[in-house]
Image (cartoon, rainbow, N blue to C red; front, side, top):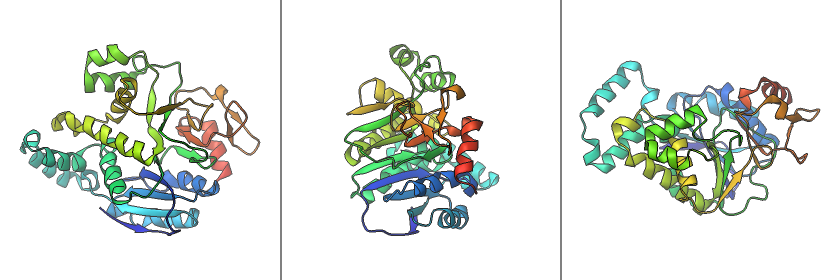
Amino acid sequence: MSGTHSKSTGKPAHLILGAAAGYTPDKIRLFVQSLQAVGFRGRLVLFVYASQMADVPAMVHARAPSLDVEFVRIRGIREHSKFVRSCYKRLFSVVPAEQVPRLKRRMLRFQGMPHVTRYFHYEEYLARHPGFSHVLLSDVRDVVFQDDPFHGVGEGLHLGMETPSLTLATEPFDRDWLLDAYGPAMLDRIGDRQVSCSGVTLGDMASMTTYIRQILRETLDLPFRKMKTRIYDQAFHNKLLHCGELATAHLCQPLVSRIATLGCMKPEDFVLTGDGQLLNRDGNVAPIVHQYDRHPVLVDAFEARMPA
């Protein structure tokens, strides 16, 4: 893992980690542009492939020149040609991964789905940079900021919740993930609980370090042959939350907290200001807006506020 800085502003207290591997610059433009617009003064780290080390930094420098950004090059099977990927897969298929835990970890870090492999990169970065007070793990394709995401944040984890009208048993994707990862017994145990989205998670450094290790523990407990093709991070996230395995957890309900997770909500739930900001129900802006891209009215509003 290697990286370059776009700008250094001393030793910031707040850190945002985002996996941008495989995304073209236009897919993450609103993310970085909105982060600069709210006056963020911490550090943003974007994990990218070698092929992105020119275009993505160029876009960030142009659209968000005041941000302190580090671009960390990562390696993964998806940056290679189809032929090379098939060679790696054939090689890995004959390696006794379950008998050598360290090897299994390295293989999964390389071949696993990006939803899962990002936690290996997060863990490594935090181990090498322990000086931050709070950390935000964030999707980058479908997140915009309307205020500093760390403003007023305290201890523990802050978890984005989906609409209360859906449960782990009634939301089809979450149901399938939970069943495939843990089986019917776990679905019976926590299926009636509200879905928490793993795409945006915020916490103090100690809580976040523990959380990432817990996610990786769940990842490595399952067979490599399964985990190399699965995106179970949200199943792990909800299992840890609803089985009481997380420390202090603050549930951030949509439109009443710092995280507005909107994918399964209805357009009539949204109140926008005249200049295109999304309001929480108390009339204040929602600092972190997640899954806005599912709603054309929000895409249009945010694009109008931050044109290309």
